[in-house]
Each structure stands twice: as structure tokens, then as C-alpha cells.
Image 1 (tube, rainbow, N blue to C red):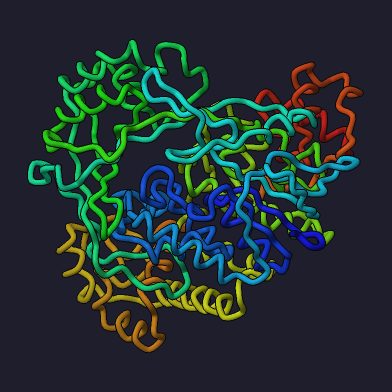
Image 2: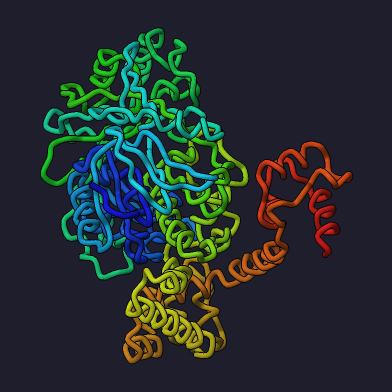
Length: 622
């Protein structure tokens, strides 16, 4: 059935698997995507949305690197919002509400149009390893598939167990069976596994809701998009709505706590700290009388609604009675109840920074198998694993993104260096260089790297170079062009900003708090320059950010450069930390386990002190 040997086999068709398969195939590898159900490729298992705080930055980074998530999100969006616009640009985060069914169909269509990519439907129960190197996989039917590299992206399916109240049954997602055998196969090779938990809320019939008593949440008046490619701008948007729980709702939920798998001991594993279930919220935050509920449409052509903020594994009758007491849900009809799911994961400290496993050469892990949560986190790992699987079989150096280059770099470095004992979710606060890692400049940061990989086409690189050139031209114009008090004082007065008595450079005015590029757009010299040079608003925004925040940007670049010096001090794979008497026992234990590739990574390992780094500096010949 399978003639010859594949270059890359990707196991799993979720967000990580789809990106991994697309990347490897687009780079020229003969790739096979194996999934348990070809009808659920790119399925949104939880909320029908992409992006959000820090996650939106990741989607734009994936797009800049040549991934498909941004394109699929744009082509299936039913609402777009730029979050945190009242804060600085480092915090601006794009988010799109998606049409769930359209999202999955767009993903499959893109993959089917990708050269070098084959598909097969079956469960993978074992991997073939010879002398420490991967040689393929084995399906549930006992069919061996030979491959030079393998990327595992099993999501929540590894020994998945679904909980609803006191009932539980095997499953990787509602209506789909769990994946069995693979965890045992990996453990026999020496891999350490763990158990995690996540959950999802009920889906309800939107026709049974009273939206008039809820707060409407419309999309942006001028919606942006994720992809830097010319995807179609969003024209028609669906609104979301906000309502709240109440003390009565909380009391009704508490009545079912004795039957909750979270409280009766049926669930032992750790759930996501920053996306807790409704029962967890009212238990942990007992002083709060209400919690927000976000009412999100599942698509343009369906009445199904996602009840964001009401994730639960309580018995279905408790869910129903409590939700009926939420304002606007008095006559609610369920499509399906919420549930929790436990699944196997493998602590990511068992990986190299390429996402290749340390134990088996050519075997890569990506997505929730690494202990992360979220479509965006999974997709970014899949993209990186697909790229590095291709590099591995072609004897190329791993493609590694640093922490000061992308949120993707922060994500992977956190996972392999610190590990995680709870589902890892990205936040802007995790990135120490977030002023550099904005959503607006992802193309400037990463497209040149994508071009070098062979993922970004020459036309795309040229577009980025033109954007960078025009941005610099506009910045220099503002730094050199003078203004007169007569033309700027009316603008300053209108914005309650102190007026000026003498001329100065336009950059000084644009740098003022409370003033934006739109306020200066009608100044004759500015308008003339923009028209003559055909400056787009995207370029104007980029120039404004760089002028306004130049001090912060320069400071972060300097800090990044200092830490990058430690990146250049490499640590050999076989380095023996035990011979260093000055290192603490804890430092030796953690360094031997993590095996950092350089001093910069070593310095970020929990429990490693500056004195330990000094010892290593001396030993490594600083």
C-alpha cells in the first residue's frame, strides 16, 4: 500500500499536524499526514476563534514564516477585533471569530492543494525505531509505514478520557475515539509521560437565547486581518454577546459539586490555570458574585452557539439547570453538554530546541503532546517541527528562533528549558522583549527567515522589503521635516496638548502622548509626502510606532544583544557537569537532564544561579 519510504510522516490532523505537514511538503519533503478522521482536519475542538492576547501575535508570526493558519483564519472569519488598543502597541493583539465548519474545510482544501502531501486515515499505535533512530510508524491495522522522520501531534487523543459528572468514557474529542497504544510504545523506549486535563463548555441553540438582555460585542469598524498575503478583507461580521452568571447560578452549580469529577477524585490531572472551568472559578473565587459569559456564534450559517466562560464537567442536569438561570439563557436548548478530558502528554524537557526528541533521532513532538493548550501554540510548534523534520533528513542545521525574534521562540524555549506541569498558554508577560515582538512587525521580523527556508516566495520578500524601505523613508521625513507653530498649534489645542512657540521637527510632535498619525495627516508637508511616496496606513502606523517608542525599542534591542552573547558560547552535547566541583548538586542534576545547547539557555533553567553560570564561563574558556 505504501511504496518506498516517506521523508516525513505527520501523525494527527489538528492545528499542529496541519502546519507540520504543510511546512514539510512545501519545503520539498515527500510527506504523509496520518489522522484518525480525515473529516476533522483542522477541527476547532474548543472555541471557534483564533488569536487573542499574545496568541494573535503567534498567528501573524506563523503567517510570516509561511504557515497557513493566518490565511485560513482570514478566509473563515466572521468577526475581527484588535484587542488592547487602549494600551501600547506591544499589547495590541488581533483576534478573529471563526466559522467553525468553514475553518476546517479551508484547511483541508489548502492541504489538498499542497504538492508532495499524501493523506491516510488510521490510528498510529506504534513507532519503528532502530538503533536510536526513527524508521517509521505502525497503524492499528498493523501496516508499517516507513519514514525518515516522524512528527507526533496527537492533541488530546492519547488515552483520552472524557468526563461528564460521574460518567466517563474513552475519547479524544466529543464523538471521536481515543488513541491507544502509542503512549505505551513511547514509554518502552524510555520516554516519561504525564497526564493533563482540559475542558469545554456546552454548545447551545442560538434560537433559544434572548440576545436583547445581553451586551452586544460588535467587531471593529474597519476590521484588519491576520495574513500579510492579499487575503480577502472581512466585509460582513457577526456580533458576539456578553452576559454574566449570578449568585443563584453559583448556588445551583455547587449543588452538583459532590458529583463533579474535579472534586470527587475522578480527575487527578492538572487543568489550565488561565482557562478554568466554571466550577473551579466559583470555588477559587468564592468572593465574586458573578463571572462573564461570552456568547459566541459558531458560524454564519448555523444557529449553534459556544458558551465561552462556562467550561464544565459537572453532570449534564446540573449544567442545564444552572445555565437556565443565566440572563438571556432562560429558555436555553442544549446541543451538547460541556465535558472535561484527560489525556497523556510528554514533558517537553525531553526535547531539543528543534522539537526533536533527545531519545530518538528523527522523532519530533508538537502541540498538546508537549503540554501546551491553544490552537495557536500548537500550530506554531507544528510549523517548527515540520521545518526541522525536513532539515533533519537533509542534513541541515536546525531552524531555531530566539526569544528576541518571536513569541514562537519564547514558547519553545520555555517548554524545553523549564518544562510545564500544567497546560502552557502564551501571554505577552512571558516575553521579555514584547516591544520588539509586536503583531504589526511580524512580517519584518520573520519573512526574510522564511524566504531563506524556501517557504516565502520572492514576491513576498520584495513586499516586505518595500514596506521596510518606505517605513524608514517616512521616519527620516519626520525626523528632518520641520513644522511651524501656526500649523501644529490648532492640532495641539484640539488634543489638549501644550502648544509650541517655535519650530522643531515633526517627530517631536508625533512622539507626544495622546497624539497619533491621524492628527498629523492633514499637515500639508505630511500629506504631500504620503501621496508622493504612496505611503499606506500600514507603513504610516509602523513609522509612528517606531518613532513613539524608539527609546523602549532601543533599550530592548540592547538587552537582547547582551543575552545573545551567551548564545554564542556553546556547550558540547557530551559535556560532563559532574566534574565541576563548584556547581551545586541541584545545578548538576538539572543541567545533566536539560542538556542546554548554550549558556543563554542554561541561564534560564529554573534553579540555575548566576554563580553557576560563572563557573561554566570559566570552564568553557571565556
